[in-house]
Image (tube, rainbow, N blue to C red; front, side, top):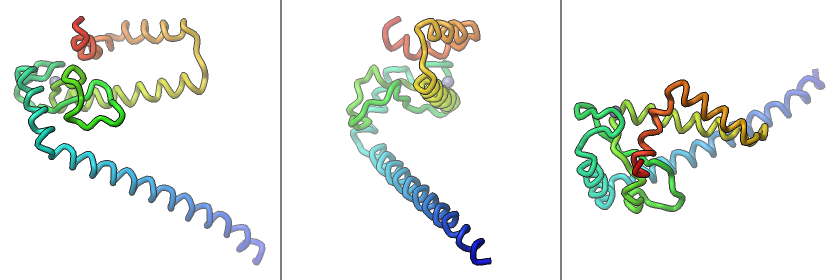
Length: 151
Ligand SMILES: [Zn+2]
């Protein structure tokens, strides 16, 4: 009986430790999220987003919708930049549906990059992935970035 109790103690300690780590991560994430939400309320950002909407003729730059909620999308994230400090060509107008799709794509890219980092890759592997994406017509989704580059 005593042996079982002793065996369980480390598990409980591990569980408590994991919960503490998760709690700490959630708190940090919440703090970051609250901080970001606070930034989005800043007049400088409100002005900037209206300028981007106006530049994009108040329509989604991906699907052209004018009837859905419009949001500003960061084409790429810049470290240590406040939202209103982003160059205009790093921001684009997307409807909420396209924005959600774009965010999912970004996550998928992160997973793909992580997989490459873990497994390693050759240049030919990148060509295969690019060809696969092109053949599946995913290339259309990249037009947002290409458009900003003037292509
Ligand atoms: Zn759209």
